[in-house]
Amino acid sequence: MKYTEEISNKLNELLVKNYDAEKGYINAINNVEGKNLKMFFKRRASERSEFAKELRTEILQYGEIPEDSGSFKGAMHRNWMTLKSTFSSNNEEAILEEAIRGEQASLEEYKDMLKERNMPPSIDALLLKHKNAIQAAINTEKVQEELIS
Image 1: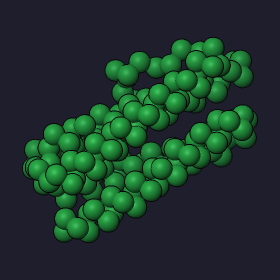
Image 2 (image 1 turned 180 degrees about the vertical axis):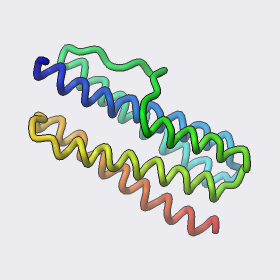
Image 3 (image 1 turned 45 degrees about the vertical axis):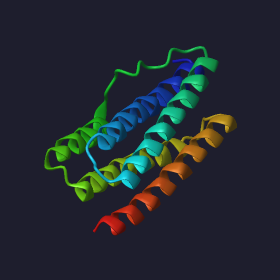
Image 4 (image 1 turned 180 degrees about the horizontal axis):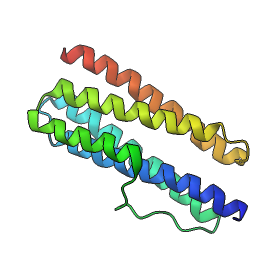
């Protein structure tokens, strides 16, 4: 496998997970009543959309094809689908807890990707920026959870 293809495949995995996270947050917006919580989820969905755009740009720069936004894969898919099923209870605290769980899974994916030794510095910088934003979101979500409780 070519070096560029290998990098693009790894970035595509993160890309799909960001699509899933964005969709999870959009579902959350539609299933909570609190104005502040809606805005919080809207910001997270927008952030994940931006992450996806940045990853798509990197993949294209390596001459590879980014995954389609309709794709769902692996553990993140299951995490965000669990979030969806939580909506039936319409319990804002449970929805926020599930969002935190999804973000923690995303954070682990980014940490694993950052451990890769063969990534170019520009990609490492992008992944670190995303990881730090996800960690900040987790911290903010935990504060939000305290406010709801």
